[in-house]
Length: 159
Ligand SMILES: [Zn+2]
Image (cartoon, rainbow, N blue to C red; front, side, top):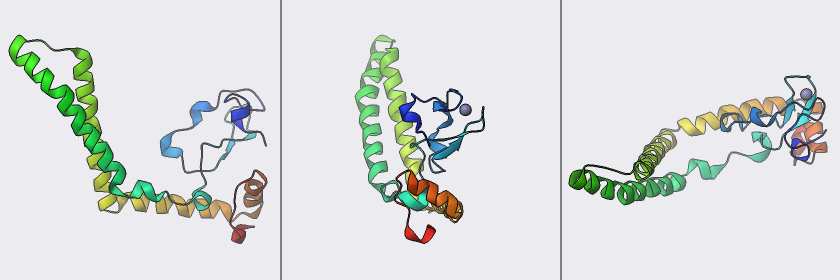
């Protein structure tokens, strides 16, 4: 099976652009994809079979959200303080600086949401759901073998 990194993101069978099929939300699903245009299969390494790759524990720790929150606060301060003074003193602001201020603010909000989903266990449950689906796919021996042939480190119990 041909991997799309060797075809520049095109379906190896019909040449359709399949690069945009990937999204972070779909990251944990089968790396063996079916082309929507021609129905042929191809290999896209950006997708991960969770039962093989394992739940990324780093995404379940607060460390990343803390780093992101800190960056958000720094952005808000670094870009917010000059914006505040330029508006109050001279009545104008720089759109570029305000854009950075908003980016920092969004980062801060996102990191808080991330921390809440970790704390409440919502994030972990989401991974567990995807893991169950992954195990179900791998319970098909032919599929597990196909992944092993592609070089994946498939656990013995599936083969
Ligand atoms: Zn195709």
